[in-house]
Structure formats: C-alpha cells, structure tokens
Length: 388
Ligand SMILES: [Zn+2]
Image (cartoon, rainbow, N blue to C red; front, side, top):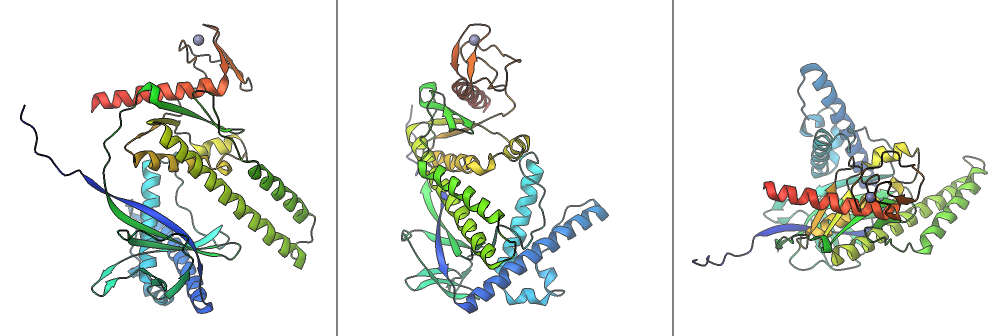
C-alpha cells in the first residue's frame, strides 16, 4: 500500500482564562458602574422586545444594540463593545434554551440584586493594534484606559488576548477574567477500553463514588468553613436589620461565601485534573441538576460544585484527546445489578447496600451505580462509534 504523504496535524484554537484582581481608580470604578448598568438595561430591553416581537409576529428576533442608542443616549457613554457582547450572550442564552430546555432556563431579566455585576469586551483588531492589550503597565481597555491589575502568572508569549470580562462582587471587589486564545494541535483521539474507563456517581456525602468504590478526600477546611458560615448567619439573624452592626456582619457573611466558593472551585480543579490524568475515559450521568435540586427542595446539589467539576473534567479530557461520556440520566443506573443486569424496580430509596434479588450480588449502592454508569457509557460510546 502506498504510504500517505505526511500531513501536518490538524490545529484548533484553545482558550485559557486568567482571572485576576483589578484596582480601578475612582473614575474608572464609576465608568464600570455605568457599564454594568447599561448592560443590564440593554439585556432587559432586548429581552422584553424579543417577547413582544414574538407575540406579535411569531418570529424570534433580537434587535441590535444600535437600535437602542437613540432612545437611551446614555448607552453611548460606555464601550459599545460591551453592548455588543450583551447581544451575543442573549443570543447564546436563547440558543441554549431552544436546544436543551431541560437544562437551560428561559433567559430572565437581570436585576440589581444579582450575585455580581459584569460586562464583557471582545478585542478588535484595529490598524493601530488590538483594542485590548496587556502590557507591563497594566491592562489597556477602550474608554476605561489603563487598568491596574495583579498578575499571578504571566501569559505565554504566543497567547493572544481575545476578551476581558470585568466583574464586581457583592463585597465590592473587582476582577477581570482575561481570555487568551492560542493555536494547538488536535490530539489523537484515545479509544476507551473497560480497563481504562471510570464511572462516577454523584453523591451528596462524598461528592462522587467511582466504579471501584473510591471517593475523593474532602479537605476538612471545607467543612470547617461551612460551619463557620452557619455560625455567622445565625449571629446575623439575631441582629437588628439595617443597623450598623448588621451591615458589618452581613459583609462578613458575604466574604465567607466568597471564600467557600473559591475553595469549591479549587477542589473541582484538583479532582478533575487527577481523574483526567489517570483515566482514558470518564462516564458521568448527564443529570439535570436543576431538576435534582427542586426534588431535594433546597438541598445543596447546586452548591456542591458538581456541575462545575463536570465542565472542568470535560475540557481537561478533551485537551488530551480523551473521552468524556455523558450517560443518559433516565437510564436505571441505580436500580440495575452490575453483575447480572437485572433491574430491581422496588429498590428502597434509603438502602445503602445493593443486594441483588436475582444473583445475590452485594455491593455498596453508590459503587454499583457507578459501575453501571461506566458500562452504560461505554455501550453508548461503542454504539455511536459503530454508526459513525
Ligand atoms: Zn444480579
């Protein structure tokens, strides 16, 4: 057989985000506030116009930001790029909703009470150079000028700055998330084998249980931070609302919330890195966490960071050509025996051990579920590969 001429490997663009603190001057902070407000205003206007237009004509259409500037001249005071980004993100929110309404909510109006304020600006290639630049002096942005940032790590010299998102937390801290793009070779896809594939079952108590019965060690600081938050909240509840002490305590509670959110993100990064390096393929149930949270009535499903962990895991596997396999959440992974395949419809919800009524197999219930998740995932993967 004649050998094929050697092709250069296919390339793709990957993104890395650096999130760092920003220290705006009072003038810059004021303009940021204005921009947050304009973006919120524009989002809400566009959303209500989409609804009105749809009701009148049956056509889904999102007007462009330019249309609003006449009626709302204050929009001209902020970077028009930030307004374009609102249009794009509303478009994406609708697309997500239309494609998968079970997971994504219908876009909702933004309120001032939101958890944090933010706006995004994309870089534009002007003939004088890109509109967003990171230099030794700081981050150069249109309208805002030179922003003082604290870089924990330097971007590599072949990365190019694509967008910047400025956020302000409820505790009054400013951050910028800089998205850098760079070209990289597409890795050879790794074909999963049962030996090199793991299944993960979400667990409230252990975060997850894997198909060999293992679960991550949860750092004791995480539980301690939650207990501290609970104490702070109960102290807050005994205080006079609106008093000076109340406000002080409220700020402490918010800072503790932020601390917990950071811990959770670090944990999700560590766990996903460990798994993505150790295995060739990972099967996870594509559970609809919104539905699960409702079912548990205010339980801490969304709180646990498992959704974030899945996203981290997905991209960390894909970077290496490995497989992230979504398993249909409606398959009876919890009620099937991993050994003989029989389904026990009458399994009590609280029973922690799987005892098979057919073959007598006994196993930790979460481990049995994780093994089924792995097997269902591999079967679906093989079927798809066979069809393609
Ligand atoms: Zn069995």
